[in-house]
Length: 279
Image (cartoon, rainbow, N blue to C red; front, side, top):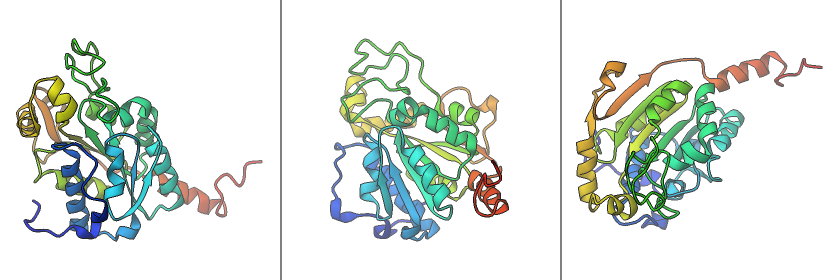
């Protein structure tokens, strides 16, 4: 549980505050939870890299006092893979929106999970494209209104947890911006995990999703997050438990050999160059 009065200035870039996010946006809560997690782990900010893509979530690296990369749309995991291979000792955290990660960046997401490379994805899921005008996203619930589905979405949304599990991610969890006691703990677990980690965070977008779907302001949206989700507990959820309300909690926490470890061992065996024996 986060301690009251924790000083996270070590990890926040207050010189650029306030943020560009809309009033009531949940992204600020995620940045706070990230700072709390880093403080709990007492990580050296010079050894942490926060990588962002394009979209609302992609602004996160500007607000943290660590190494930072602001990359292209859908390609944050490609940059992160290169970073981790070049400097395996770095702690690499990727902040991505649901559209950034699962639409244009979908293949990168799948294959980073398949490789089990040691990066942590914080997937901000507000069910809509917020920065570019409120269009339908891969996670927009069936029947939800967006600027491109004014009569309600006809499509079935991705279940991020099922996708991450199927692709091979070794730590998979879901939380919400309503759960400010749980969210830092899930981020801490994910960052500490030696493999590909995904924390999906349901976050409110009152400007577009809340208004278009008549849910209300940020406070009402937080209550809505509370009501549509169900805490599954600290144990690993089994398939029978993954039925009913949108579950939060840990879906997988397993140890498998990590990609940069395999790559580094092959480099050593080949005199420092992977593939040196290939004619």
